[in-house]
Image (tube, rainbow, N blue to C red; front, side, top):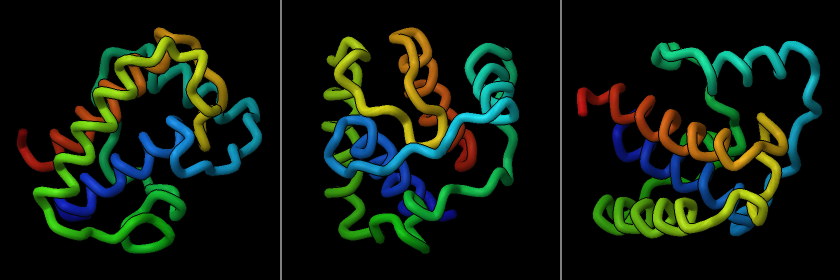
Length: 121
């Protein structure tokens, strides 16, 4: 994933939970519940190389990169909208399902942080 593809991936992910790009959530089984618990409670960086859902992968079913500056500006707008919500108005996450306000905050931070670390930011 390039930096520009990561920006588009983050845009698609935030659009999904904000309701701009609805994605049907996957069923939450015990394995996914354990992954969710680890992803949002353990103080370690998310692992590298975890496959990206094709629905939000810029090389597959996600939004392909356009103009970099435009895509980055869109990410800023989406992040502002995400932060301004109370968590109750967000759509269920397409992988993690419904989350509490605290889990949504950790998701937003950890997901962006994960991709920024990929590129040494």
